[in-house]
Amino acid sequence: MEITFLGTASANPTPSRGVSSTVFKHEGKCWMFDCGEGTQIQLMRSQLKAARITKIFITHLHGDHLFGLPGLMCTISQGFSEPSKETVMMLYGPVGLRKYVRVNLHLSRSELSYSYVVHELVSPDEELPHDWETWHPDHDAQCDPHHPNEMHDGTNIRTDEQGRWKVTEDDNFVVWAAPLQHRIPCFGYVIHQKPVPGKLDVALLQSKGIPPGPIYGQLKSGKTVTCNGITIKPEEVVGPPRPGKKIVILGDTMDSSKMAAIATDADIMIHEATLEDEMTEVCVSRGHSTPSMAGEFARSLNIKQLVLTHFSQRYKTLSQECEEGEVSVSKLVEQAKTAFQSDNVIAAQDFLIVKVT
Image (cartoon, rainbow, N blue to C red; front, side, top):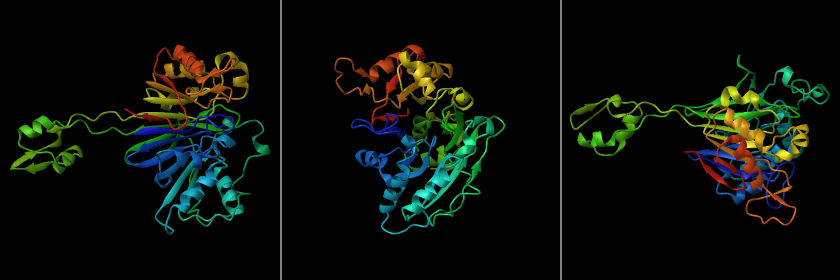
């Protein structure tokens, strides 16, 4: 289980940073979070394979988190030797994402070799900006017809009683979302791994004459097995289930507090830190966070590791030399460490891979 950063810049790409895109990889499958301009190029430069991407989650509809999506979808399509009806790309994001994808693919006459579905997270009225009605994409009345590769409308996902969105679930993970305060509707996502089987007592099995092999896997999956005339129940050799990992990936935010209900005790939190603490007023006025805001929030939720990203172009990467008057992201890391009251803070950089342990 690992996280790869494809873009860590805010606003626009630079020669040293792409814009927002992060990939979660588990057992060969890849889930992408945001897809800013040029993400497909960053993907080609990474160790990841475009064909492995099965889900894409968009935090909000600002261009530096979205403009790379149509191009990436077309690039993935070119990787198929022939059209596949079985392959379905799942997209998740705010209301408007469905129309955005349809219009881009329709106007560019782009046909895909796979199917896709867009599921939209519907924000309550109180989460919408005051001018929302002047540009709200009313997808029921105005949205273009289905694209030929669009399997169906997808789901309009609404909040539960606790104000959370249950975005998707499979055998291993549940993905939740909660609102972030930004200039337009924006979300933070939490990947929560389901409890994993306890550790297998290999020494005990070997003492019973059971050699390593498929039987070990059967026991871990909860099956009773018989070998060499001995019947072994899983509870005899498998420890209690262990809590799964929890990974928090936030979009742009000047207030992350509503994530608390789903993000507490996470193993990793990825939080933006666009500008240094000395620029708090201008940072918040633009809907963004400083390192201390990220650190204080992570500390309040008992986060184990904090990863900063979404840096202004004014900050050099860790590998670049700073000339007189220039500032490195190392300053942002130190400010976050002070607020987090822990040294377990790192600055993301393009192509950084963080192992989830």
